Image (cartoon, rainbow, N blue to C red; front, side, top):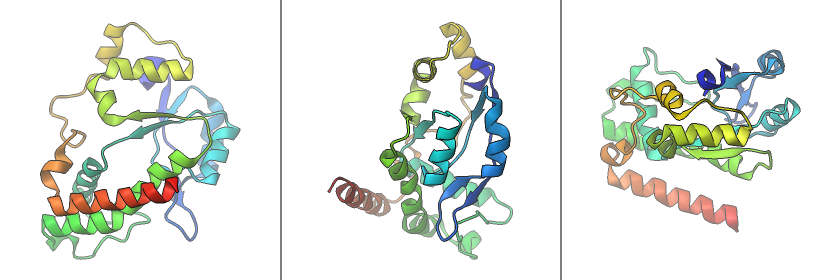
Length: 207
């Protein structure tokens, strides 16, 4: 999208809210970067009060990308596996991570990381800020349509379909972002547990 719109792609530094696991935009770096405009920011953040007030103050309209959470869990595991030192701010990874088998790793992720990841979804669902939701799977299934949908919502012009397709093409060797790997690699008992937790969250949310 950044290339198509002739925008710069950027990200702000982040920090975790005091006493919580919120992922917030660093107000200093946001205050420096946001006023320049014509930028696409890629950020993993909750819709915390701090984040939404900052986005609103700079008239930034977020596009919230949602993805099958079991696939996120697989990508998360592989990200930790590839770290030279398994450290992620805000998440206490077991010190014996490197000697755990895959089942134990997925069990730990389903217990400790899954609820944290769900808060990204719930906070964006609950916030009243002007936003657009788009499914990761839908976007990569038809990137031309996905780019058009986002641009239309942002009221920005786009070039013709051929240029969009050329700019948005995904390498066939792209593995980490492929859909469906969660159902293939995560044991069914853990998938069932995550489904049960999700259903409980939904019931609590709508009640």
